[in-house]
Length: 102
Image 1 (cartoon, rainbow, N blue to C red):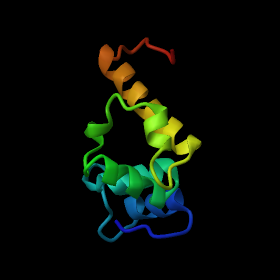
Image 2 (cartoon, one colour; image 1 turned 90 degrees about the vertical axis):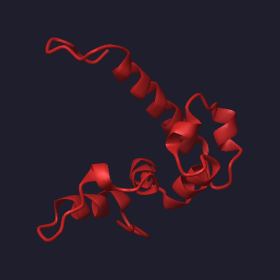
Image 3 (cartoon, rainbow, N blue to C red; image 1 turned 180 degrees about the vertical axis):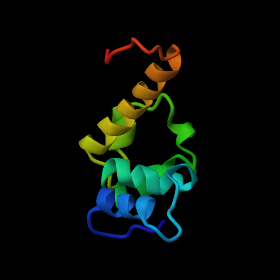
């Protein structure tokens, strides 16, 4: 999947749902998935370079570290920190059918 410009989320949706050779999200590159979440390929590339190609290397990173990266603003940094908090929350306990948001 090589989304270069335009509406990244919309382009990703088209890649994921096209009839001929659709791309499964779980097979996409981390950089592409991050670009979709951030809606900004340049920020995603800068963050992935800092992470040495693996987002797991960012676990525990602070906002100020992310904001210091080139092409990474406050919104992108907040999204990354929120993503790790969400993952931690989801992995901290098994999901029950009666669970609600919170």
